[in-house]
Amino acid sequence: MSIANNFGNNLKIIRLDNNLTRKEAAALVGVSEAFWGYLERGERNPGFEVIEKISSVFNISPHILFINRESNENIELGWRIEKIVRLGGNHKQFLIKFLDAYLEVLDK
Image (cartoon, rainbow, N blue to C red; front, side, top):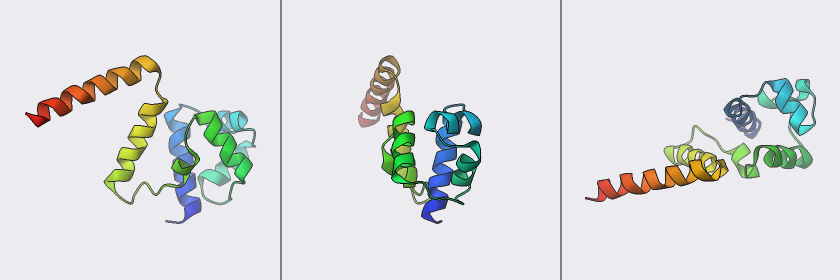
C-alpha cells in the first residue's frame, strides 16, 4: 500500500471515529470537501500545513496519519493507545485502572 493510501485510509478512520462527514472534517481543517475526498482516496498529497492542521484539530501525532494499519498487530495496538491518550481524564483513568486490574489477574 502506498503512503498516500495509508494517509487516506487513516484520515477516513479518524474522521469516522469523530462522527464527522467529509464536509464537517474539511471545514474544521480549512480545506474543501473535494480536497478532503481526494486525500481520503489517496489521490492527492497534503502539504505540511494541512498535516499539522489535521494533527492539531484531531489531537493526534502526525506520524499516526502515515502508519500502515495492515502491517501488524502492534500498529493496531498503537492506534488504540493513541485513542486512549486522546480521551478525557475520567475515561482515560477508568481504562488505565481496568487494564491494570486485568493485567494483575493475568499475572496470577
